[in-house]
Length: 228
Image (spheres, rainbow, N blue to C red):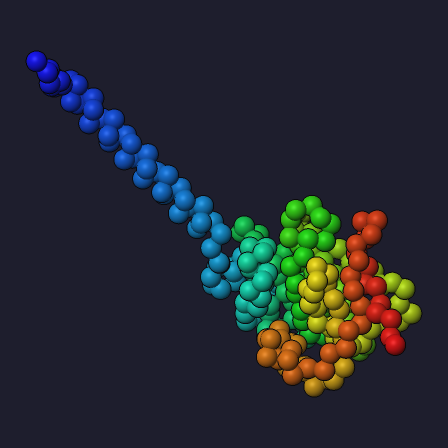
């Protein structure tokens, strides 16, 4: 004769407790996933303004705009914000994990005009390589990169060494696993460069390939393209 197991009151309560624990655990795991994803959500412009303008060196009455390229957000998980009514100063900030880092210089020029994500030193962290321009009386266009592992700004050296200031602004592209440097040869793009050029803006520019970036002996070089 088959016997049917019938748990007593204590056994039934224990079984219910186990089921409840499993349900709660599943809910906690689900909540953890939401929290983890939330940590990587884009920061709203108002929150970025509070973070950036909290610094004593940044006036709080300027207009800020987000200029984050989609490939930068997808590969680096950071945002870029630029002061767009700074008079003579158009500074750019990288925001990630509640911290803001100033990159480049914008006084007297256009500030940051082009940014690409690229793991410069092959440490597994995607860095930012960028072009920016500044100058008081003499326009200068320069390259730099931000080591995202240490949040430190590094220069890009010229190879061969430059004999003077580069006055033409630059656009960067990642092509075949390398960062390629293009010089803008027409000078009618000041409005787009000041705000940060869109792909449509860049498509209307006259670009000439002028270099390829090479990382050697812990230094990033802009190796000048050889003209035919």
